[in-house]
Amino acid sequence: MADKLVVGASGGIGAAFVKEFTQREPEARVIATSRNGSDSLLPLDLADSASIDSFVARLREMEFTLDQIIIATGLLHQDHRGPEKSYRDLDADWLTQVMQVNAIGPIYLLGKLIGLLDRKAEVQISLLSARVGSISDNRLGGWYGYRASKAALNMYLKTLSIELARTHKGIQILSLHPGTTDTALSKPFQARVPAEKLFTPEFAASSLLNVMQQAEGSGSGQFLAWDGKTISW
Image (cartoon, rainbow, N blue to C red; front, side):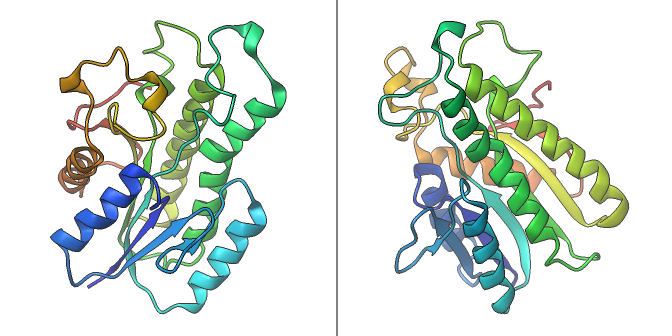
């Protein structure tokens, strides 16, 4: 049985992914991370390249055969900072931090992880993006940093999928939108979300795993929603 890697397992959806794996594939080993680590979670901070390098070095020392990698991380707000309503709210340091966590950290980590894989390995790599990262679907404006970082993540993943189609034909890259989920990330913005459109982390993780399963064997570099529908870039 191959191993699973879940990055961001201390978050609502990440923790739900770990739980789903233990129920669906109880014989599989789940390697899970959080920013600070714990007894059951390896430390991995996507805002710190040294932390990424250290994690990859530790993973290299473990005997593993990954067949699934999920990066379930995201930064939308922190302390007194949140998504911008107007260009007047733009702050360079905050924009940089959001881009680092949501886009730069994940693609840097993937570059390192792929270096550990055999070129003939069959691995499905899925990352949580967001519908607001779709440029063609942007009709409301605002949320500059978060939108731009998720759009950048999508471009990184699309570009990676094209390169790997030449060098690692068994790797599939998926960009996934979980829907509005009842987690700390969305908590300040749930007031106007209809109850039926606010998902539990368990529902989001289960739905996305079903989408991943259905996508196996199809094209790499797809942008899919929780219900399996394609989202335009």
